Image 1 (tube, rainbow, N blue to C red):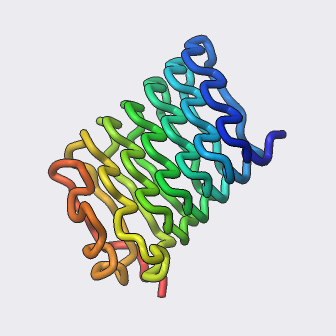
Image 2: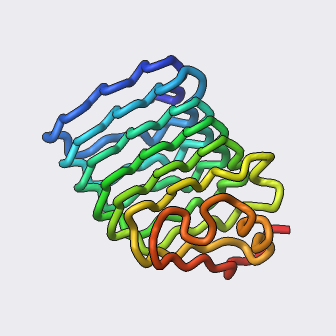
Image 3: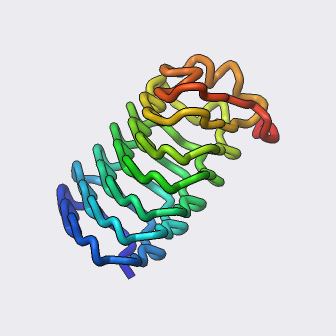
Length: 196
């Protein structure tokens, strides 16, 4: 029934290294806000977790809010971020899924505001099986004044394909890290329906 995480370091290292955990239910969580590092390494090293359902999560606005939240959760094969609309905190998703080697694809179905400075910094670093990431809802106005949201977003990944709406070519090409966003042999395609 947890809906909001708002305190500084309030869930920091909460289940760190609990390798016996096989499932977690965060399906009611809507907001991670206020307080730096509120979910810092919350499930760090929980290698038994296989899936993460965050479909109700709409907003991540805390500075370093999801810093290494699922770092090293090597058993995770799927992540549901379909409800996420806003990422505004500085380094909000830094290393959130660092080293989750079995995730193969991610779709940010409803993400329309990506304004946090370094918001997606290293979010999927070393997720070596990640082959496709889609941003079907982004608009030319989604990024605010920052241009480094994708800093090292997919560092350590080779051959990943990033999909954006067809009207975002000029906007995305002006962001720091384009066209590889920290990965290698990255393909950035503007093959999704226009959002404006």
